[in-house]
Length: 239
Image (cartoon, rainbow, N blue to C red; front, side, top):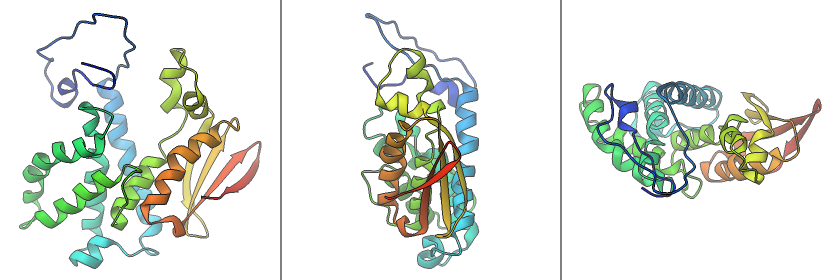
């Protein structure tokens, strides 16, 4: 095992204990994630994406509806499935985790989607694209992928930087994450408005590096406005 790798993840997916163990041969910094942490992520991430979906669905053509001639509920299935699965590649490595996530998702989708679709391949391809394109280095080619990527970009409240901050790793990433108090998604003029409440100007770095970069590759830039809130004042952010 090396930096960025994960151990013991199967115990979080299944119900049994892990059959193997790891012993550190030198000083290590370890982050511990329990089942409750995983369940919290699974519950909250699709909700954020679906909130964005509800606001944008009348302003932006849904790719599943337009290209596959299916319904809004099918578009929602793509969004929910890719929101659940887009980060599972982290169990392999943080680097290229979107690619690992696609590989790990394929057998799961082959097992689940035929229960609901006679021909499940078109929907599966939409899900796999959304999983791959949630990374800011990839360009989203569908509205659903853009929604999933944008929702992932809003995951930057202070909890993201709490563990490295408390363990003494204080850099611009952890300090700026701690400066994000709240992210609120609501209707705006564009029509989607994202309000980020800051406790310190260091949080601007987090918004630019995470949300800003994601937005540029979602294909939804013209439909989203970002406002920074600090000390009761709102300022629109240019992306």
